[in-house]
Image 1 (cartoon, rainbow, N blue to C red):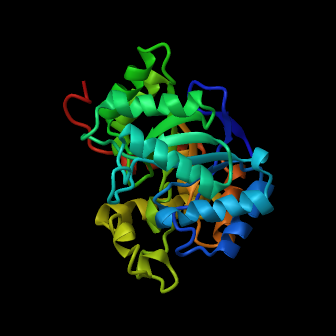
Image 2: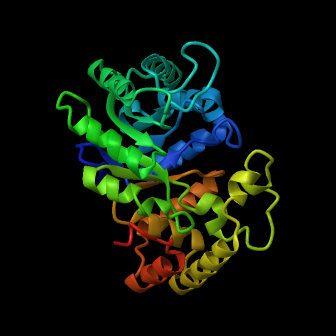
Length: 323
């Protein structure tokens, strides 16, 4: 699998990443082991998790696999903090105490002495930004973290945080942001992508298949074995089941037929090769789904098809973005 530089850093990661949001929920530990092995065998290196996924259980599953199945030094391990909210003085948020406590807990669950990419999963307006970012510096200078990033920040939040670190020479620079991006969700093109380009941040795109809608399986009904049929993820999927989505899915079906491939392959290749994107994050429910997604490595969309998809999915940009 092709490797790409992540932002303005020396860190190289696979251009497809493996996500673990449902590990320990819809994906059992045995299934997770099979997925990780499949991903590793295909040349994948970047694995993304978070301390809030199943209240840390996803990290525990991953930690066990990196101890017994896949060599730790062959994986780029990324996790996140700041989204956890629990009672107590260190129960969550982006304060220095909460973040460093969360980091130590993540290291314990993952069974490792360092995180390759530690990301702030949410902006915390109740904590001074300088305090939050200083915690990232402490994590790096103490050797517990190699690189730092953010996730789910708006455009102005992304630019503010990146500029803050850039203008303090002793600070650890941010190298990436993680945001939702697909043919159904292109809102980051208004301000987030320009901010990342200006500050040279790599983009990790979550939900590149539109939360499953771009596979085409939800066109007529909800498959009983799909995530859309579960009580805990039905709303997550339904968010993108709109008339606009139906038009985009139909365009994908047409493109896929012409290329002798699947709508999912076309949608994933579109995200993967967008300017500024380092890697889409795959959140497969089953190993066969993951294996299918990994074959996208061999697909490059023709310019005419890419232009047609750009056009039908184009977000509405208004003042001042259109100036």
